[in-house]
Each structure stands twice: as C-alpha cells, then as structure tokens.
Length: 154
Image (tube, rainbow, N blue to C red):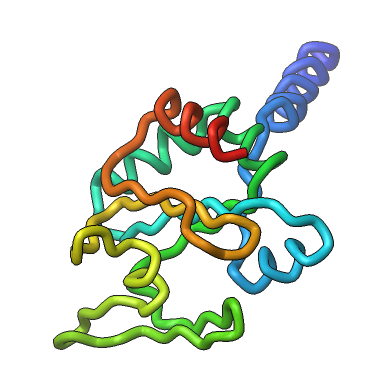
C-alpha cells in the first residue's frame, strides 16, 4: 500500500514539470531585458469580457510549439486594454483614458491595436527591437496560423 501511495505522489509531482509555461513580461521588464538581449515583442491585446480572447488564452497560448517559440525568440506581453495602471514604455507614459462611466481604453492599447481607425479584440501586435510595429492582426489566431507568423518575424 505504501508503495502505491509513493508511486501516485511521484506521478502527480512529475506531471506539472513536464509542461512548459509561457513566460510573460510587463512592458517595463521587456524593455529593460531587450537592452541586453534584443528580441521582438509579441503583444496580446485583450479584455476580460472578450470571448475570442479567452479562446486564444486557452488554446493558442497553451500550444507547446507556441510556448517554445515565444519563450525563446520573443518577449510576450499580455495587455488588458482596460487596465487602469500607468505603463512606462519607450520614454512615454501611457494611461487609461475613460470614455464613459466605468468604461475606457488604455492609451497603449489604442496605439498598438488600432488598424483602419478601429480597435478590435483580440489583437496581436509584434514590435521589432526598435519598437516599430512589424505586424498587427485583429481576430482570433489559432496556433498553426500564429506559428507561421512568428516564424516569419523571428
């Protein structure tokens, strides 16, 4: 009986270590790290109420190939477009801008997610090492499609 318990405990202890975890950064952390190790930034602009955003979080960003390439070749930054926290990035201070009662959008989300005068969630924005926008895409991206994009950019 004791042996069986030990086997079960070892099994449960080993399972989590077999899964890769996506490393996430803040803008400030990624900017600081990029000075010593320049890599493009992948920014996932989302909201808490966006169903397609949740789908990407639970499928695309759980894919082992996506996790591997993002952890190795990019700085991955999730950005809640409705965060009220000030963000200091690229010598600018970006703030939340209210546009009604308990609604608004963060200035940095507007900068990174605006395509054809529209902000849509989710948006993936990829910044080069000089912080210029190399890629933007509104809409859900599955792991296969995102992998193709990441391979082209890296």
